[in-house]
Amino acid sequence: METFTLDLIALQVFTGLALGAVYVLLATGLSLIFGMLTIVNFAHGAFFMVGAYAGYAIYRYVPNFWLCLVLVPAVVALAGMAAERMLIRPLYGRGIDYPLLLTFGLAYVMVELVRIGFGKQGLSVDTPEVLQGAADIVIGQFPIYRLFVVGVAALVLGGLWLFIEKTSYGLIIRAGARDPQIVRILGIDIARVLLIVFGLGTGIAGLAGFLSAPMQGISPEMGGPVLTVAFVVTVIGGMGSLPGAIVAGLLVGVVESLAVLWLPEAAKVSMFFIMAFVLLVRPHGLFGRAGLMS
Image 1 (cartoon, one colour):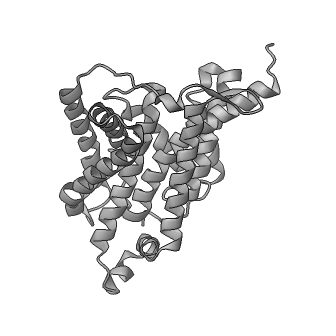
Image 2 (image 1 turned 90 degrees about the horizontal axis):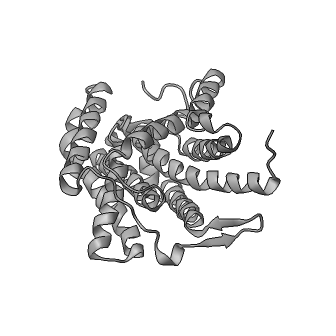
């Protein structure tokens, strides 16, 4: 039986954290949209894919990675806000099935548009020169870019927490998630709040796509597998729960990375075992609450 050193296991844990950071960003955007709008956004993976291609296109004309890091989530957020305003908003109040089916179809349209614009073949994306190479993290050498991804995810989540918990607009978002009718009675334009939340959620998904591009390349179909991961992580953490998305995303990333060492064949399905166990013990997820769909 093959033995593994503690340093190797620790490096795999760090690899899982970097993978989990992308999962966290994906699930955070999905949970944010569901928690506020009660919409199961099946186009979330497509917005992830659009973020990767938007970064690729912008970088061709403006070869500045740091500028792309700002522009990509903004562009994807605007696309998400346009989708919410023109397509999803007319379906509010008609039941959860209508926006679900609409976003499912929207994902296919977005994929086909990308195929028309960029072709069906996958594309490789180079890691920025300043972020190439590896850094010594005591237990061994670890890719600098993966450390950067973890850092960006932490900054985004910290900023999101400050926005939701410490600003007046964040208070409106939290109140709207619990009782939108009361928010309307208080004279607040709930439609604008929903628009911003949907844009924020899709913008985070686009940022995750841009960050993952140098690690896995890009293709029109890249949103499909990550959509599955996003839903699994969201279910494990609890639908609509941001803390749940963070904990579950990191957990899934670390477990998947460690599974590569001991049972590589089961690495990709390990998340489903976690989900099954969590749902058996806590049907609403680690941090979810009952009655969110009602």
